[in-house]
Length: 454
Image: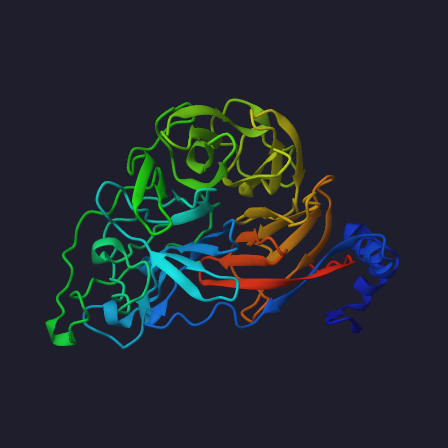
């Protein structure tokens, strides 16, 4: 075995690398010679600060940064916790720890929890799976909902712990955050969500006083986008839970996975996963404005099973993100097709790139974010299947570097679902499934591009 940096490789692979065989070796050689520059990062091992209150987060499917460099996150809540993570919510009572953290949380750049809310309330359908989050220029918080109807017979949800006295942003009316169903439209082979526990009596009654929550019908599948004030007051809903739309619908959605806000045009862009399209609505009234599918064409039937050797599919498989660059270009993650597609704001197709097109399973392109420089020279791609963040040149969409690998330690990833960037260039990531954490990577400037072995 030969050692290169921190990686051990076989003699055969070492020979291939030295011979410059393949894209990986070319990228590493170019980086070593300084032909490419790429952002460098160092993980902040103590970010965020402990939540307290016996709170534990579930699977993260939403991370964004607002105009004040506050970090907003959303997670699936108690239904994504394992039984040994929610002992006080089970019937019979099982243990002292833990309660689901509120499903929407706001942190400052130092990792201090500033605000929290989330859960069912009057006038809106709280998501099973809060799967994407965005904050507009007025401070309103938008949440997408991408949960499917859970299988019959699933256990009831456990309640969240009551917020500590004097803490900001308690859920309205003391409502406990609800949990989530499956995440947005993954490919075959995905595991089912963990069963939920029965709800305990409010206020943390002793075990003897805890009664089982009555079994009821499963909640309807998600088909809505919600708009709240920054303190959690409901403002508007687009779509209705359980009323799944079709690709040509002007009023309905189908498991929308993400949202992006165009403040100048007062429009909200929705990655409408189940309908395989990008749909655009008025951000004040919710009125439908336009929609498009892959290549700017009319969205239609789902493509055949993904084949890395086949020509690119003419339809989106599962658009899981939509982001708007400063130059007005609209970037769409087509996770199941391992690709990014770029459009103008009218839906006219501009270009595309597959990222690690050989990737099967859940796909390679889960979310994207732009670097903080004025030109947004780089594009960060969250790849939950390969468990890394790819760094692309935004003009060419060619991969120049990456950071992170699979694992549990700080700086590693499991179920990497979301990526966001603050004004200083720091990167924030969220992990779904059993990853259940957010991480901060401090920006350390530009340096020679290097590709970790993948």
